[in-house]
Length: 165
Image 1 (cartoon, rainbow, N blue to C red):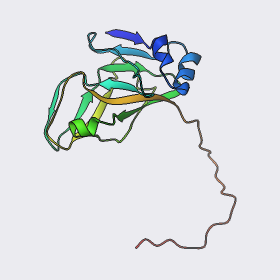
Image 2: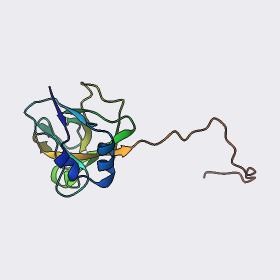
Image 3: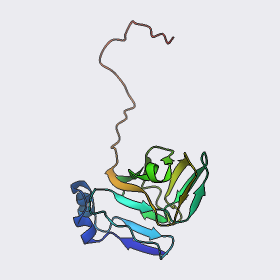
Image 4: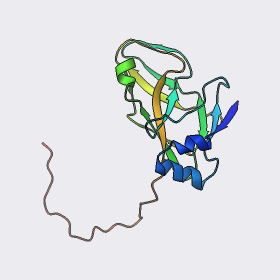
């Protein structure tokens, strides 16, 4: 087991929002690498998201699905969640579609065995090698509580009936 913290040089490459999160909460991204020899997370020179790589080799036939192991578990800060999305070239290079469109990982999924995975569906026969960059993530501030137990729209009900044909 290996734990890595995002460094100050990594923070310098991040977008302003992510910088503000990390600067306001020191050491917020505690990362456990399942394989101690797996490459550590790095910010890309261009872009604001952090790339994630396949932690194993996969061979998929067209029409098959898989949960691609990303080789990390992470403690996300209490008021944030991570958004996981495919890289722009993932479909073109591998013929893979992330089946849930975008993955939302909240901070309750932060145990040592809560390994991040990318659910995919293969549109063609494909091979993914360990270390291939398939997806990316970013931290996003969690939505505040917006529900109320009482509701009043402040206007009268519509007298029109809705018919679905």
